[in-house]
Image (cartoon, rainbow, N blue to C red; front, top):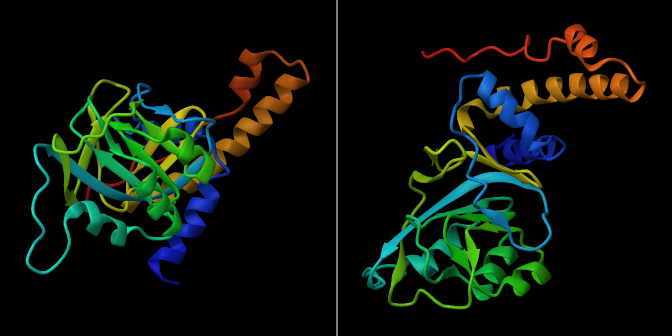
Length: 237
């Protein structure tokens, strides 16, 4: 089975798990700063997604010229979109114009993009909603960034603001999981362990909820269930 098929199976399992449970597992495994800032919000109604990160980065200034052989990053990035990936756009906190609009979104959606996460802004928000491409962004505004900001790098590590106040590192291929609560970033090399641990924890949480539904005392219910005993921190070797 190839890596893309493994990613798809893993992400399908992940989609059945709340980000809250995954966040708890990441914390118990020793992975701090894996939750993105709540200042990044859904555009429209939340539509959960999970997929490997396609990392994109830009900065202020004019768009770079096209290389002798190839296309400018603003076009080349479309050809790096794969089925099920999540586009993660690091803007460095750009707060003026939109970094993507409806035409880019449509191109990515047709290539199989599962979602978009950016610490910058987007425009054509209604188009994204209608085409069914989930987006989490810092803001929505009609102004373009043309001539002010440009995409420059593709498939390189990026950082986005984190909920704890520290930046969250996102490596190409890390798993991005988003639902109503927000976004967690799962390190690719530990994704199988994180998902397996989260499935066990969600099963325990289900038993806890069932007992609470039957009117049992919450302190006593918690005392009966070791929610994190199955989790081990990964070896540093």
